[in-house]
Amino acid sequence: MRSPPIAILGTGLVTSVGLTAAACCCAFRAKITNPFETRFIDSSGAWIMAHQVSLDRPWFGLTKLAKMAALAIEEALQDLNRNQWHQLPLLLCVAETERPGRMAGLDDQLLTMIQNELGVSFAPPSAVVPHGRVAVAVALSQARTLLASSKIPGLLIVSADSLLSWPTLSHYERDDRLLTESNSNGFMPGEGAGALWVGAADSRSTQLLCIGIGFGREAAHIGSGEPLRADGLTQAIKASLDDAGRQLTDMDFRITDNSGEQYYFKEASLALTRTLRQPKEFFDIWHPAECTGETGAASGVAVIATAREACVKGYALGRNILSHWANDAGQRAAVTLEYGVAA
Image (tube, rainbow, N blue to C red; front, top):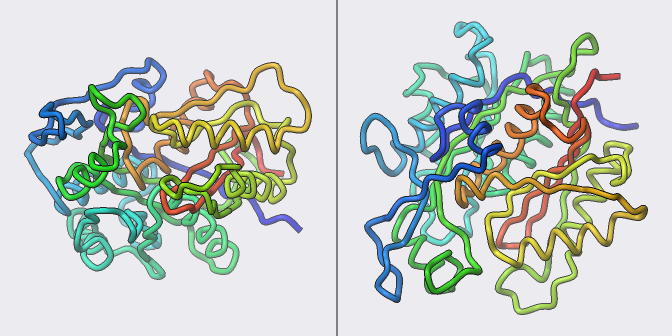
C-alpha cells in the first residue's frame, strides 16, 4: 500500500537572485546570475567568486542564516493566520556534519534563533535535519510519517545554509573544486534559505504533490577514487518511482541540485541510462544552482519551489517531475512530484 501524498501548500525562498520564491524562480527561468568577488583569494592570486544574499544589513554567521530563514518562513506561511503558526512543527535542514568548516551552533542554536526572530515557538516534534543537500528529502520523509501518525494541521520544512566562510572555501579550493579562472570543473559557492509549508493533500484542488521518496548510498562518492556507476542515485530514483507507483517514462522533466562539477552531471547521466527502459525523445534537466551557486541544504527547497512555481505559472514541461540530490559523502535522494488532484 502506497503512502498518501504530501501537498506543498506554500513556498518561500531567499537566494542571491531574489528574496522571494517568485523572484528567484523568475531569475531561474531567465537564467540570471549574480556572482561577486569575495574577500578571499585562490592559490593563483585571483579573487574567489561567490553568490551572496544581500539583506538590509551586513549580517553574517548564524544571525544571517536565521534572518534568511525567517524571511522564507514568512513567505511560505503568508496564507496561514499568524496565530496558527505555533501549531506547526519545524524541521530545520542544515549542513551535514561532514561539511568542511561547518558553522558552529547549527544543531543547538539556529532553531531557537529563528523562533526568536519570528516571535513564534513552533510545535513539537520540531527538530534539526543535518543532511546537507539531501536534507529536504529526509525531512519530507519524516513529514509524511508525522502527518500520517498525528493530528497536526501541517508542518514546516526550512533550510538555511552558506558556504561563504574561509574554512569551507579554503578546503574546496585546495581540492580544486571551486570554479575559478584556472579550473572550469568546479562550482561557485553560495548561500540561501527556503521554507516549505506542507500538509495533507486536498482531493478538491490542484496542488504540487510529493508522491514518492527514495534514498540510496554511493560508494564511489566524489573524491573516493572509485569508478562511478551511479549505484546510489539509481537506487534512490528507483525507490522513489516505486514508492509513487510510476515509471521513469512517466516523468516529463527533471530538476536537480547539480551545481557545475562534471562528477554530478556524469552521475545523473549514468543513473538515467540505468533507469530509463523506454526511449524518450526529450527529457530536460533543470538545475537552479546555475543561478544561485552551490547552496548546500538550501538547494532542496530551491528545487521544490522551482517545480511549484513552474506548474502554477504554466511553464513547466509537464505535470510529472523527478527531482534528485547528492551529498559529497555519498547520500543520495530522489523525490517524485506531481501537479494535480490527489486521488
